[in-house]
Image 1 (tube, rainbow, N blue to C red):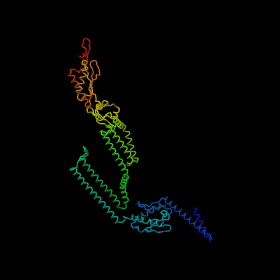
Image 2: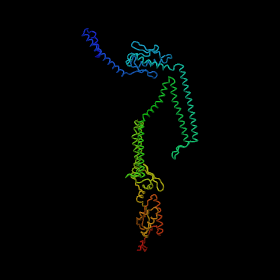
Image 3: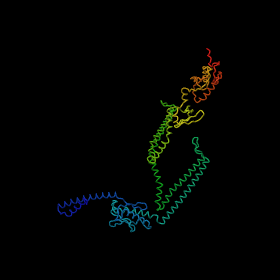
Length: 553
C-alpha cells in the first residue's frame, strides 16, 4: 500500500474513534485537512497514471469497408480490444446488408457498469469506464460521440440497396457510356476534319523549313510531321477522356466507389508529385538562371575584348593578336566548367546515388578514352603560344611543305603546292622540327637559290655577273637586298655557282625559281656560254691548257 493511502486509512479511523470535546474538534479538523491533502495527491497521481497509460496504449481500429470509424483501447473480460473491434465491424456489416435497417433507430442505454449502443435490440457496442477513461470523458458522452459515426456508416452501407436506387445508378452508368461514346465520335470527327485541312494547307500554302542554306524539312516531310502531331493530339485527347470517365463509371456504384477513388489517386498522385516537384524546384531554377545569365554576359564581354585584340584595335604589351582567340576559348571553357561546378548541386537529382554514379561513370570513360585527345589539345595550346606559324604561312614540317589552312585544338591542316590537304596531329608537330618560310619572308626576305655548273674555261667574274643579271630580270626578286653568288664547289672539270636572291611572295616561290632558271638560260645563251659541264680525259702530250687567259689590263 502506498504511503498516502496508509495515511488516509489511519486518519479515517482516528476521525471515527476520536472523543468529542474542544481537543477532539481540533483533532478532527486536523485529520480532515490531512485527508483532503492526501485525496488531492491521490487524484493528481491518478491523472498522471492515466495520461501515461494513454500515451503507451496501442489501439484497435474499427474498420468497415476500408473506413476507420474509431479506435478502442480497453478489453472486456476475455475479449481484447482487437477482438471487440472485429466484432463491432462484423455487426455493422451485417446490419448494413439488411434491407430494412434504419440508422435513426439507434439507442443508447445504461446497463449497470456499461453503456450500450443498440439497433433494434441488437447490441452494437458496449462501453465501459475504461473506454471512457482512455478518451478522457464519461461513458455517456463517449456513447453520444460514437452514435452519429455509427449512424452515418449504416446510412452509407444502406445506400444503393433499394431497387429504385439500383435502377437509377444503372441508368446513370448507361448515360455516361453513351456520352463517352458520343464524345469519342465527335473527337474523331473533328480531328479527321483537321487532317483534311492540313492536307489542303500542305498543297497550297505550306513552305519548306529552311535554316540559312540548309533545307531542314521539305513540304512533304513537313506535311507528314503535321499529320503525325494531329494523330498524337487525337490520342492524347481520347486518353484524357478515358481518364476522366473511367473513375466516374466506377464511382456510380457503392461497391466500386473505393476502386474509383483508387484509380483517381493513381492518376492524380503522379500529377501532384510532378507539380509539387516543379514548384519546389523553382528557387533552384531561379539560381541557375541567374548564374547562367551572369556567365553568359561575362563571356560576351570577354569575346568583345578578344575580337578587339585580334583586330589589333586594342594592344596589350607582350600579348600577340593571334593569342586572342585561343586565350578566349580557354577562358570560356574554364568559365563554363566553373558554372557547371556551381550549378551541379542545384540540378534535379544531383544528390541521388544514381545521378552521382552516372557522373562518376561518365568521368571515368572520358578520362580513360581521352589521353590522346588531351595530348593533342595540350600540344595545340603550346603551339599557339609558341607561335611557330599561323594560318596562311608557308611551312615545312619534316618532309611536308605547304600553307597552313586550319588550326584546331586537335590537328593542323596544310595545303601543299600540288593542292594536297595534309592533316597532321598537334602532338606530332610538337615532336618535329618546323620551318616557317613566310615568317622569314616578312621580316628579312626569303632567299631562294639554284645551282649552276660551268667549266673552268669561262671566267668566274663573268659567270657571277651573268647570274646576278638573270636574277634581277626575274619577276618577284627584290632589288634590295641585291642578289649574290656563292661558289660552293670546285670539281675536276667545272665550278659550282649558287645564285641567291631575296623574295617576299613566298607563295610564288616555285614560280619565281622556275622563272629564274629560264632567265639564266637566256642570259648564258646570249653570252654564248654553254651550260654543259665539260668532262676531260687528260693526256699531257701537247694538248692546250684549260686555264683561262689572263684578262687584259
